[in-house]
Structures are given as C-alpha cells and as structure tokens.
Image (cartoon, rainbow, N blue to C red; front, side, top):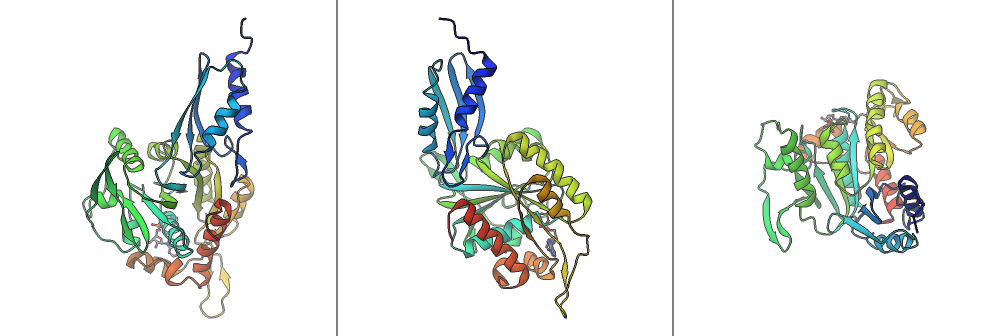
Length: 340
Ligand code: ADP
C-alpha cells in the first residue's frame, strides 16, 4: 500500500506527538522546552537529538513509546545529549559587554551555593574571561585526569563552586584572539571534556552578543534556559532584543531578565535613584512574557567584591543587593525543584 502521509505532514505528526511528552518538574512539553533538536525523518526512520539533564534521561523511553504509535515509522533513533552528572544547565547572556553579565553569573552561582546547591561555572566568555578573578583565583594549573571515557579537564574548586575557564588556560594579561575552527573546537571541548562530577546547576557565562561562539554553545549543550542581563537604558535593551532572536531560533527558553545597575541607593536616606533611566527590564519582560527575575542596584561593593574575589551574594547576603541574588536563586530552585 502506498503511504499517503507526505514528508511535511510526517514531520508535523512527529512534532505533535512529541508535544505530548511532558517534563514532569518543569510541567511543559519537550518541544517548548527546546529539548528536541535536529529532528530528521529519513525514509521511514525518525532521528532526533534529546538535550536533557542527567536526571531527565527517562524521557527517552516516553518518546519511544509515543512515536511507536506511528504506523509508517520503522524505528526511532534518539541521541541523548547531556553533560555527565549535570542536572540543570543555564546560560547567562547579554546583548553587549559591560552590563554586568559575569557579575550576575558569579553572584547567582554563589547564592545558589549558599542555599546548598552543587554549582559549576563555565566561563565561556573568551573575549574577556574574568570569572576566576571574580572568585579570587589567580593563574592556576588545570589538571587533566584519565577517565574511562578519555582525558578530562578537572575543574578548579573555589568557594565551593566548580570553575572552568579559558582564562585559566590562557597566559595572563594576553587577550585571547581565537577564531573560527579553533574557537569552535575549544568551546565544544569545554562542553564535553570537563569532569564536573555531580552538579545541580551548571551556569555558562556566554560571550556578549550573537556570534558564532554563542550559537555553538547554545546548540551543542543541554542548556535548558537563558537568563538575560541588561541595564535599564534603551540601547542595552535593544541589544538584548537582538540576542533573544538567536535563542528563539534554537528554541531555548528565556527564563527571565535581570536588570543590572537599576538604581542607586542613598546611603543616608535609603531612597532609590534610577541613574540610567528606568523601565527597560520591565518593558522587556512584558514584551517577552518572561519574568523580571531581579533589579540589581548600582553598588560599589559589587565592584570591589568582583576585584577581590568576594561575591556580594555571600559577603553581604543580607544587604538589599545581596538579597536580589538570594531571590533569584530561590526562584530558580522553585522552577527546577532542586532545593528550597
Ligand atoms: P560583563 O560581564 O557584562 O562584561 P562585568 O560583570 O564584567 O560585565 O561588569 C563590568 C564592571 O561593572 C565590573 O567592574 C563590575 O564590577 C561592575 N559592575 C557590574 N554590576 C555592577 C553594579 N550593579 N554596581 C556596581 N558595579 C557593577
């Protein structure tokens, strides 16, 4: 009998069935969560990649069972893409440099750690890797260990956070100028060849903007959500908007927006002055239908803490600035049901 189902409608049929597979913690379907990529139907076979955390691999069985109802499908091939031991991988991104993306990444990591989560930080900002310094690490030797799956980089551990950075592999004070294939290779190596151990969260500090490096990382890692950092000004907001299109194309959800340098708190009276304008973060949140996760004040201690390796989320956790990071960490824990 001639199969009447045309190629496009086959694809549609598969997508419709995949939309019925719900990730139980996030209570959303695996298509909306960006977990299914590279879906291809060749002859009567279905091929797809499933980007999930180490605790979500059981979704494979559910997918197989759903797709087994398709009469024309002879077999489904699912390639699981995960980072061994890592549950939730999040990316921190910004439209441009200097808005406080790395500061936000370090402080969210520190706040999560303070609440008992096992946290790793991957500094993928090859144009200005500075996470090691923000956590108080100088130039350190990266150990390579031999494992059954090949040689792996051992992350450093600082303040209870596992850290891997290109900055640790490069010579001090020499800007990194890797391009094209080398850049691609370095990033994919980072994603695959780091022995993280067991992690609740891996935060990836992306390079600013929307270039090859960002797309490679997002496409080739099980990033399940992106946190966008912006400042309140219109220009910065426009940059973030461009950034969002990139994530939408890959299908990775935007978890929320962090507005940095939102206001200055008066030391004497506690009043808040929005030096760089106001409303940018809220405007973006409404437009994207994504929550505004927090508004971080301009705080000199953020800057000095970054220089001396003391994240304010820990050193001044009870201050208004520290509390913003605590709230963001709490919101992430609620979303991913990892810790209270
Ligand atoms: P990005 O990663 O976006 O390039 P950084 O996190 O490196 O930006 O921050 C740039 C500079 O601004 C750093 O010196 C940092 O300490 C400072 N900074 C960031 N956020 C704040 C803030 N809310 N208040 C004061 N200084 C800040």
